[in-house]
Length: 250
Image 1 (cartoon, rainbow, N blue to C red):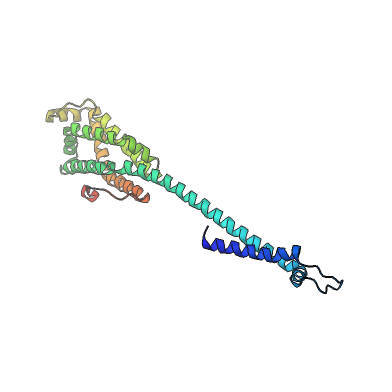
Image 2 (cartoon, helix red, strand yellow):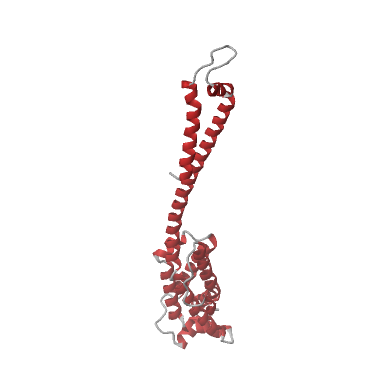
């Protein structure tokens, strides 16, 4: 008990004793006009309404103080419980974002490098042929991307991501799957004549065009997704831990 509460309790006891003891032990007045008797007892009798009101106010004040303490204790317990919950979510976010965001940034760098090589060709046909020659590389990238997106810690933390980030991660998984499907059964090495043969086949041509579109879009979207992952981590107080600069992807 604090000193303040001890003092308040002592004052309340003293006032109670001063009011109650004269009522029970003080002498009553001896005449009908209330002359004589214990003066302190008479004073209490004369001002009993005022004294009763003061006691009621004191009781109300004490009730308010008690309720405030109860509310403070409840708020403290709630804060502690929220902190435990937030800590659990913070750890889930940290495991989901790091080092997955950095790995994803690295994949974005590779996609950007491939796109740069493709765009260096001066005709659309040559650009498609360059994609055909990199089928195995692209398939490996798609496999790595799907493996990253299927990591348990990323799936667990993704429940805390906002709608936009969750949607973009789902979209990215679909793009990686589309690359895997388009590069299915590709030979270990694509020689120039293999590429020309692939482009001459309608199904092969369609698959390469599909990959072309995916490369253009994925290269632009990966840095956005990485930044959204960092933003989600920062919202939960997780400090940024990126080793590779995301800006280097662009």
